[in-house]
Amino acid sequence: MVAGRSRTVRVLSVVGARPNFMKIAPFARAIAARNDAAPGSAEHILVHTGQHYDASMSDAFFRTLSIPEPDIHLAVGSGTHAEQVGRTMMAFEPELRRVRPDWVVVVGDVNATCACSITAKKEGVRVAHIEAGLRSFDMDMPEEINRMVTDRLSDLLLTPDAISDANLRREGVPEERIVQVGNIMIDTLDRQRAAAAALDPLAILGAQARPGQAAKLESLSRTGGAFALLTLHRPSNVDSPEVLAALANVVSGRVAAALPVVWILHPRTQHRLERAELMAGLLANGRVIVCGPAGYLEMLRLNMAARVMLTDSGGLQEECCVLGTPCLTLRDNTERPVTLTEHGGVCLLAGNGPARVGERFEAALRMPRKPTRPPLWDGHAAERAVDAILRAS
Ligand code: UD1
Image 1 (spheres, rainbow, N blue to C red):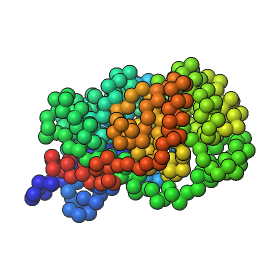
Image 2 (spheres, rainbow, N blue to C red):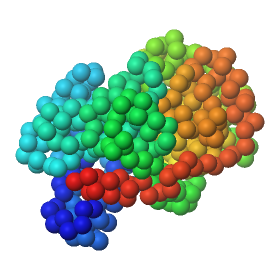
Image 3 (spheres, protein in one colour):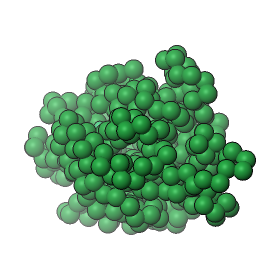
Image 4 (cartoon, rainbow, N blue to C red):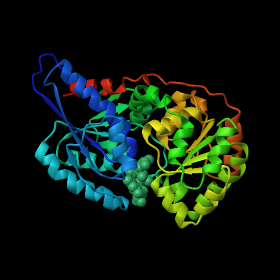
């Protein structure tokens, strides 16, 4: 902080979708701690765009992670990308004019991140981006577009690792705007780990499993409880019925032959499986346990217990590194290369073609559990982010 500064810095932060919540929880806590130490140093206004709205996708995370109630709720809901981004910008602009913050802080790469950074910049408000600099170099991913637009507009780029710093330098971002703060999501993991460890994985599955799967749960408990954990939600994996059917096939065949599979369904994936008439087959498969969306602690506990993770989520790849869970990344690329085995992580890129997924799954089965933490993934990223914002104010 600038010595002798007396003005209160107004910080408006934005959340929209599930992966934002674990990033904003430590940020809100770090601002509150700064205010306790130096009363009146910063004011925090939290905006929820409402991109995710189901109790299981939003409210449950606010409760578990003790995120303060949003001061402003934009209730934009689901829709096409243009509808979501457009509705968010239209609803956010008048609130921004009313609040007039010194900073808009956005996290991650969802539509809310991109929409609110454009709106802020057009209103002349400075933007800080937490999780800046990630690049998959795959413009077919909506998140890559969100990341590039947000980073191009940001005044302060708070990065999780050195690879991200290098990406930004290559794009010509001035050095003084880049601050490596570490991975803010790991702040939440460290804080919640003990509470998650106290949960019983089989009890979680008992509560989460879709009805009619009691025999599968009994068999899992009888055989010692080893399982593979699966999540899918990327449009590139779930929107085409052919791709989704091929993935469901390798999961219920080659993967399930080696280990029972726990499939935690995102609402998007559930709709697609039902529309493609694949759900009944999965429910009938004795080795695939189909579950609804899990809460934060429940997912963390299942990740700790899983023998192997199969996922297309970026956040889960990072959590697998810290927990040591061998992870098959069901994509051809990742914006988080630091999580890959070649950079010391636990993740193997496996794409979404059945032959490669099957092969890489068998390689992952041979991997030991090997927890790893890149530099600054130490549980204190939020404090560094708040420091950087106040220093730049
Ligand atoms: C969004 C993010 C993605 C992130 C993911 C985590 C973008 C571009 N994508 O994708 O980066 O990894 O969140 O979940 O911002 N739905 C519900 N209830 C909800 C929310 C969604 O049923 O509370 C269903 C709706 O049918 C909706 C669909 O899920 O159309 C997709 O939701 P959407 O927010 O558009 O994208 P996600 O796939 O969740």
